[in-house]
Length: 261
Image 1 (tube, rainbow, N blue to C red):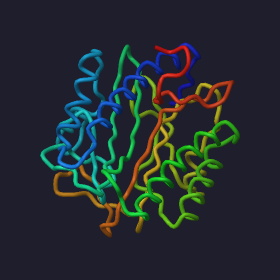
Image 2: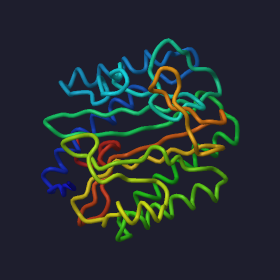
Image 3: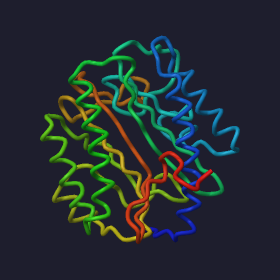
């Protein structure tokens, strides 16, 4: 079932979104060579703990319950990386994805960070993935159906020489992290026939393009969580929780705006 959220409910979701933003800020301050992914995740956990918020990723069902409050994926790892003792190295990229629930409402966002200086083609990958998310946010205020947005997202990525991951997609979000409908970052006539949806005010989406330098396909690693590119080339991931309102798109997981605490 698809849920349309009222302006009051969207304001409540903004509180979860701000907390997710704060957790990401705590992570960003630590990004440097020698820092472990576990240290980054622990810093994000403290933000949620201090606010009495529920981390959405911790214990998430799978082959084994997910063991951390954030997914941290490095270089060729696309998504769902498990934080631990691995140290960041100069020239790496690290994708951090997290979410929380507070007062019954959820927020979810991801950012890929460079660790120091990265190769020019890697910088282009980051710019493209960040750019396609910005494009999608703009287009949800202009288009009538998600398929129109997805088609332009795919063209944007492929025109830059990269590929869109199709095995993982975005999702609606609200009381639960994963709600219907699914939100693909690519165009498919088959998906349009069974899953396309209109972009009505009250719709709240977690839009999360994942972009690979090479082949779009991914494979699961032995830990049964981490997803990596099949060809070993690198991947980036950016995500925001976005509400469609009568005034246009509203990003709920961004920095505080004028008048916000």
